[in-house]
Length: 404
Image 1 (cartoon, rainbow, N blue to C red):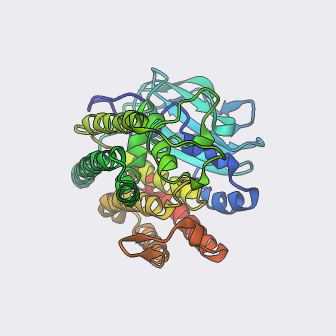
Image 2 (image 1 turned 90 degrees about the vertical axis):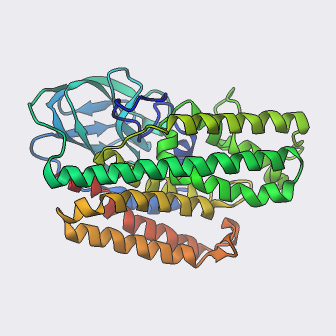
Image 3 (image 1 turned 180 degrees about the vertical axis):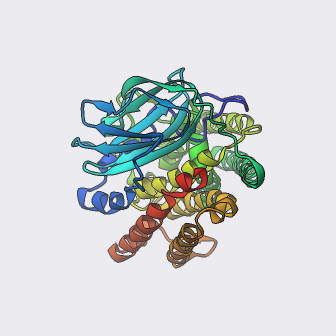
């Protein structure tokens, strides 16, 4: 997804291009994958106005209706195929993402809840989470409903949007400054210092990962993992430099980059980060974008961090884990005052689950950071994944609750 002007609504969500991190989910060992995905079944109030059923197989994407009235739409997506899949609602241009749910394992159902104005759209399923997906036209007719919040609710939504936009700007500012510092250390051959800064700089990326990923051209360039590349794809960005700094996990015969190669790769990362910074200056967010983004960040934990796949060379996955949790919590806390006017019990449950997960993460702190993922034992990984699952279920109800 390209940069969008402030007036264009959807971009907190995902790029149309397959995000490599999501692609990796299919590679998670089967037993662990079942554990991680078991908690992904969302609330399923799949009846009533705006409720649509989606039957996703390995070769089809059947939506129960081809049109719906404007307002809050709930797509209840059931994966009846054999491959993990994703579901998207795309804008008329087929590029901008209005909403998406990912990592829907075979046999499971997940809901996508979005506030949708009149217009022409596309629905799409991605069995195997690759390619452009199986698409179909979808029309949202004008119901006359005013999607904008009113009264006290409008005030709470505005406060949440303002706070989240400021958070995104702050994180991108810190990311840009630390990426430049990292570039200078790396190019100068100060590898120990560069290795020390690497996870700290990436923490800011992870905190806003779903926003960063909304720019489909930047995400593959900045955050693609080598194991996810298709033949012919160029390996660039953070993980290319990670491999060069931690070559012990590289393939036999790996030859590190020379100074010219380091400079080229590091300069490209800085340029991409500058572009991300520029594109996020004027972003605005709606309540459903913040809620879906919060859940999306927790999904990132489940599919990449708690499995130890994100930082294959450095094993600094727990910094990324913390960054995703930080961003998810900020999104939730921005919406929490609004949520408490509608579902006090759900707000309490989400807050409690965040606290429980944070206790487990804090137990893995070491100095200013965390232990390496390779230092975790099986019980510790299991405990973290269970806590992620316990949070995932109530957090999946956040968006529908605040839109109710």
